Amino acid sequence: MNNSTPASTIPDPQTRYSRTGMRGVNTEMLSWLFMRASGALLVILVFGHLFVNLWLDQGVKRIDFAFVAGKWSSPFWQTWDLLMLWLGLLHGGNGVRTIIGDYAHGNRLRLVLKGLLYLAVILTAVLGTLVIFTFDPCPAGADPSLLPSICK
Image (cartoon, rainbow, N blue to C red):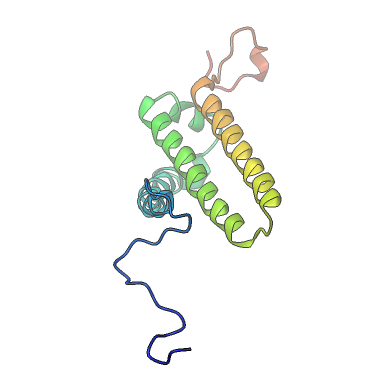
């Protein structure tokens, strides 16, 4: 072995690392950027949610079925809660995807775990979206004795 050349070389930090050698969109960098942006937005959404629900007026004492019904009658709060739901699910799902990639050994196990994760995120997002937009505190034909006091 020639002593003038090192056995291994360290690549220039300015060059883009590519595990596969493929060119195109760097999805891991986009994922990293999404985590930073969604995390910052989630901080605003969650603290706004906590401020309105737990601190204003009487605080937690006023939260009941009627409070949620009144809040979700506004498109603003439906959109707020929807953004919080979607960003929370995507942010958390992306973090768990990264953990699966780091710790799951074997391609088959990684594929199964990621498939279950994607299914759980999609199902929760769909069900949560349906709850937010189809919530009706006063359904037609319901027994009046079972309805909340806000229903006339």
